[in-house]
Image 1 (cartoon, rainbow, N blue to C red):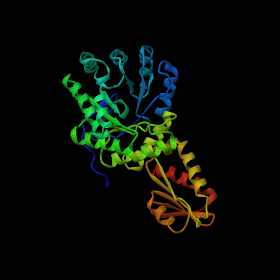
Image 2: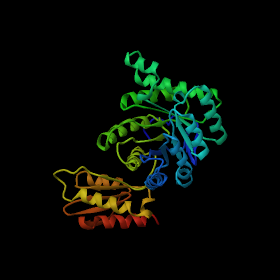
Image 3: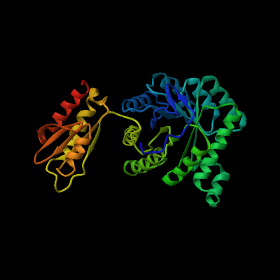
Image 4: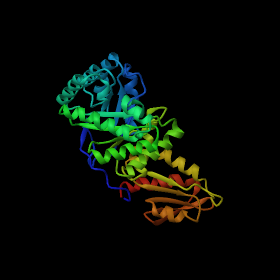
Length: 362
């Protein structure tokens, strides 16, 4: 791998998911249902899990939401994180309910005594805490310094996170994860780079308020991808305005594209040009759908190339695990660099699926 070596961090367990160290980078999302509606929230969590989500966070804005947590936690297929602000008693309720992690800011749940109470309860139940600092939630003094351009936003978020971590450390609490997110890719990158140099806490990375699908996917892919390429990041969330299920799909693709975590077959296809003589888009989409709906094939980690012309097609197709290089209404199928057969464009998908199935038993 050409990327920088993974940043060394301590390991923190979120339920049955280890985060940090050399463990796989996990993908998480946050429900957008009313947490007080346990049934609806669990339905969404199950969809997130089915798409490959490793961890899920739920908002706990009031006591009724906290009272719904036991049902959600006991029936969730993945670890549940409680997102708490302002009221330390909600954090205590969440710990009692068996959540796998808290997301809090020690600075906004009242005086030092409240923090100590939460930390002690979390120690007793082995519940880790994520300190989540966002650009919009800085302490007044730091926010003022940023406005007056005395320090950068990245520096301010880093300082805030480490100061709040110090509060927990003074309470003899050490299972800490940190995130420092802004809607700016550059400022987020700066904050995480500084954190990675100054601490060994596992880092939850992402670009907050990234936007709707088009904008959000681009900003998240650039920001998260740049950090991961630097070896920074132990768990990720792609923040999109829309269904949280989409966040899981994009997060997985980011990790897969960087070669950091396999997620079954990866389809690559050419952008097409005036030399293209087969319908690359149609073949790629049909192949994608058939793979998505086949549980057996989904377990195989491989690269499949769908190429549309004789210029780069044969080379790209033969360098993939399985490849199709199109010609005039037909093409050649390769496997591990070897020509397997000639096939019509119409039958290309079926033949590729047939070979994929055989590969799993060879």
